[in-house]
Length: 109
Image (cartoon, rainbow, N blue to C red; front, side, top):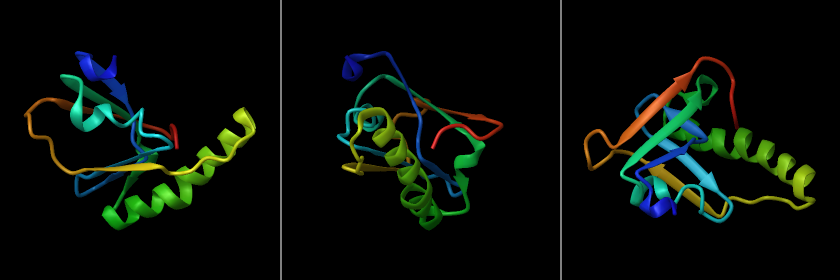
């Protein structure tokens, strides 16, 4: 259903001040709609995910977001997690398709 949705709501693991977004997922189901589906994409993120540059964004993914998600997965499912799919979102082709909503505070991994 995500591929035919008018709107898709999601988040990312890091936002570089240079404009790139980094998102990762175990199997890819969550992030697959970001580049290829849904007429409109809405990304909601806490300001804790903003980092200076792309290198820091990838570091945040592996050193902050992944360990927290792995701990959550072990607690919730009794299984370790892993980064199976990774998305580097640089630029949107369709103007106005993607909206980023930043929330003051520390939200999510």
